Image (cartoon, rainbow, N blue to C red; front, side, top):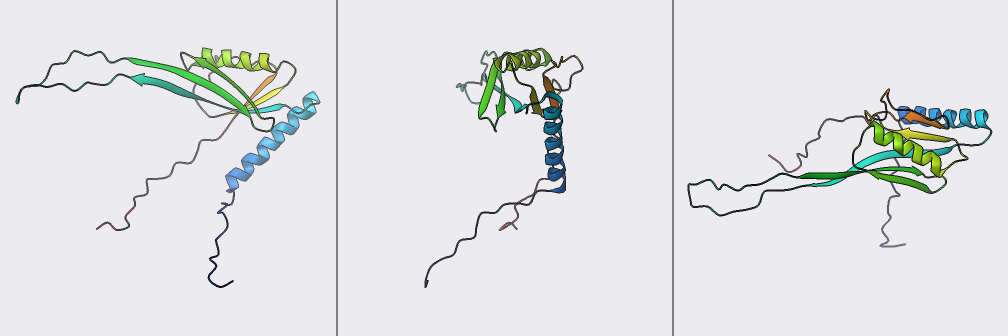
Length: 163
């Protein structure tokens, strides 16, 4: 093939040792729950997000040398969306709350269990404070597992072409 350009295949990074250990641990957790209850549990990955607004300053005119006085009130309004995804089954469960705290997480637990009344559920969560709270009740059919924190890398500066 004269003149044909060959394309490299997609870059697929190798899994790190920590990632391989984590996958092995998750497989063991699922096997434990299956042996304990006789059926495979629903596997959910859960996270929250805040949606809101903060009022901004408005532009105004003032004579040169004078600072404009503009009465204002900063308003913060937000809602928190809680969502859990079961990728294997293609299921999504979500709720919207005014606050993101232990009480809201408890309501989310109860709603998730009501949506799937006959199933055992394993949820993988990040390490947010309301996920690990000692005041958070964990119902019997629910098992919480925590994902490790993402590794932090120092900021890499792009110095190409800079002097």
